[in-house]
Length: 429
Image (tube, rainbow, N blue to C red):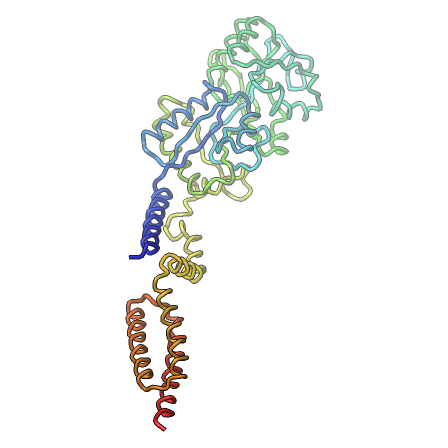
């Protein structure tokens, strides 16, 4: 075996190994997602850390690497710059560019509580008041900014003070530094109950909930926000706070994915997130709030195609799953075969060189028989032609010869035989 042929077989072996590895990777290798979540210790951070552990224990193909960020703006910047693949983002603020929704993490409710002695009947009555907010970003953004704009108020009309932690806001209330608080949190969250108790003790009365009467109008202008209500007694049963249902604004927190992520990978992530939801609910109640996004035309949020496939269950067969690949093979078959033949010829040049050598010998025989003056030369030429024909026939039978090359041999052999006949006739005269 020639060294070049050995190298050709070795290259084919490595190609087969690489192809097998690629098939294995595409079929079984896990999809690793880096996910940006709010500050460490927050409910979303704890939930997705637990989800990451559940994925590993279940040996799922979806894996999460949790990265925490201080502010929503930092989370948005991380996914837009490609540092992370997924992000937990508030929908009351601009969503990241180049990202699509995967699922709803939780619904946030807007709540404004004020001192019981204040005559505040609407948001507009907060003008000149000191309002505390738990945020790591600039205060007064999102829903609060929309309320200001709708009531034709400027940010300076309400003095909003930012607190990094809920407990710091509770302390400020207990020290009577504030006239009220602005909260955006899930229903039933622990800070809500703590703030209600703090205001009860600090001001010796039941705090007032400011009704957001403009909720429906704002929700009409901004589809990301929805008009909702705080049910009677939702914050306290005795006494009932609020005494009656109070209008408010709600919006979802979304899990977003970069638009360029593979559809199959996002589909697997979505499936596994809902698969482990029940198991996580006991230790992380927030898991029960995970919800599917609407995929119908006209839905509020654009959904990643991979998540939409899971929700709509539209990809159920192998043919549908690999339709693009099948179309490529169908229309590109001839090109693929030609490329493969060319590649094999480059790897195994021995037969090609043999054919070229035989063809060159036939060309030389043609010149020899033309000038032959001895019948023995013609006999030797015929014997050699018979040998070459036998070799070509065997190669053709074994499938080791390009059928397109045979006409060239047939033509020159036929020409040599014609010249031999002519030379025999001339020599016999």
